[in-house]
Length: 321
Image 1 (cartoon, rainbow, N blue to C red):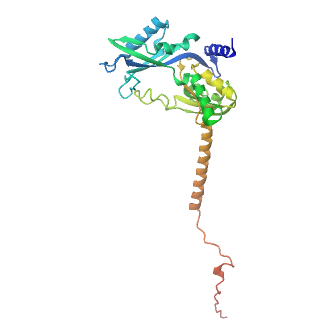
Image 2: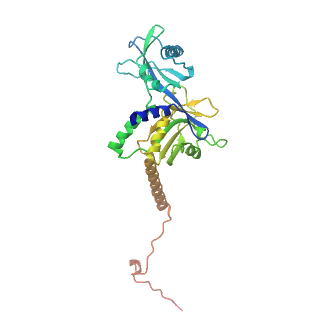
């Protein structure tokens, strides 16, 4: 057996393992697919689809064709209105979008599920629909690695070292009984599992999920947080990103399994942050100097005895005794 083949098998085995983190958190392996639902024949759909019936049809299909028993909560379907619809290469407008999560899938099925589901057809209420299935970009570690290797070779000339995580629950990274906001100390402790950290930034991520939930009103502020972690070693960055791909986050004592988006930093977050801070400090210093000059009291110029004003002949006064 070649070294590359053995390495692939080891990585497949690791992909099925639950990874324990600090603060009662764990990373649970799963397969996640993004699904788009199209009418098989464009412009033939005369009424909106029934989301519940579409969900039941998909669940029944997965059970009969793939021997997968899927809880309803692991399949989320959203009917798309006209302004949300997009067009594929066949110019057929998608009528619904779905997210599928499958847990405890054998290694040989994990990589094939998207291929098997892409292009299948379903019959619902006398109409036929076609599915387009794809793996989310944040779950495709191989594609991300290829992207950063090309970026490093042709653009930045340096290996990446920073992981960006969006959509994690803020309260899971907070100090218990202190605050509901994410804590730098707690976050540093959790991500130190992967290696030594050089820089860390934690902030509320109120923009996360707005596109998917734009019809449900305003999202609660501070619900999610964004975490940017810069590691000292490339190997630690590589392994952390590989582990974070294809998993969901779960808190001890909670049934919730939180999906998140993970990527690598191609924009130089911490370098740009330092530049912005320096520019801000320079701007503040310049404004302070201008303010000092404008508010300083006006003083009459000091003229010494050697100045032109003192070269004039002094006046003489007649004094009587």
